[in-house]
Image (cartoon, rainbow, N blue to C red):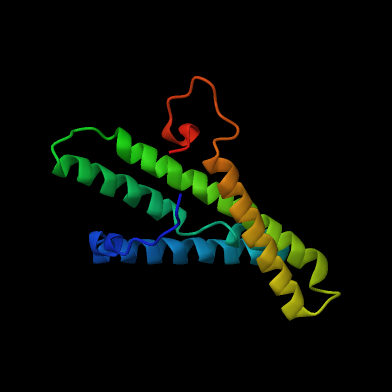
Length: 154
């Protein structure tokens, strides 16, 4: 599979959907800040690491896929749910990579050079995210008997 960018998707998104993502992301960031104030920055940072855009993104992905199907005369919402599920799987893989990034920072930032630690943590994030993506694309582990698109390497 070749990685590419599809900027045509930007034209499919309405202005109010961007506002929704911005507001929901801001709200979740505020919640993470309140958690950090109450329980400390270590706990709050875990919540801030949550991809704050995901809740809005997943619903919009499903909506856009369903609209595409309706446009061509297909009354199925299964494709939208599958697309949202794939988005969720990607978010989970990215979150694992973010946890690895945070662990490198947490263990080293107080005792080593900050720019070096941030660079090393970024490298760890790239390696983990890319490795998880590669493993997922190769279909490992395959779930026997599953009818979901993500288990078939789609």
